[in-house]
Length: 274
Image 1 (cartoon, rainbow, N blue to C red):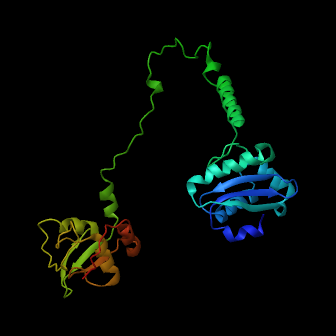
Image 2: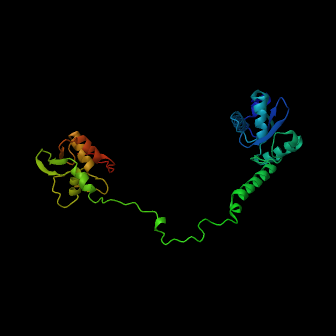
């Protein structure tokens, strides 16, 4: 679709425009409150993709081709409030019978005519009359008067859940034991797993020589050890809170694989091991 040469200088302004079919001489009248170039691009995109709301304009485009359609500015308007009034003036001037416009009234989104709306409404009414409640009138429900001695067979059974109280103990038993050493590599003790060591570090029995950085994680005391950092300290060989850790792998197991289980979904901890 081409733009009329006399209209190029005003493409950034607003007002009334028309899209003319050079073969038939018929045209579409429209208005814009944004800019002519924005409206032109919208029409061009919708027509090119065969999705334009105006079926008459779309069919004209499909039949005669893009090269036979011209976008032309009819009037530039400074006051946005007068745009629709001027569009109505041009629609009345050229008569709706000679235009591609569907709606004889200038509206912001003229999509369908009153006749189309009436036809759609009647079609919807017929559909529900044939397939809705009217179709069921006079019919006896299949279960009317039917009585059951018990309704247990209608109840949805609840899923049975197994006993998972021992799951945590079972999972931890498969994890590697942890040896704890002081900063001078003096042996301090052995725990069944890093998780067990973390739980024990929260108790008053914790007597490990822990030295933590200032500003511990909120909700975590300076004496508390976190299992994910115990694993990281073992893997890196660097101390964590002035302690060294060594994972003792169970028979026929891989320490790295076992430690990865503990590192899944770790708690947030911005504190680096020290």
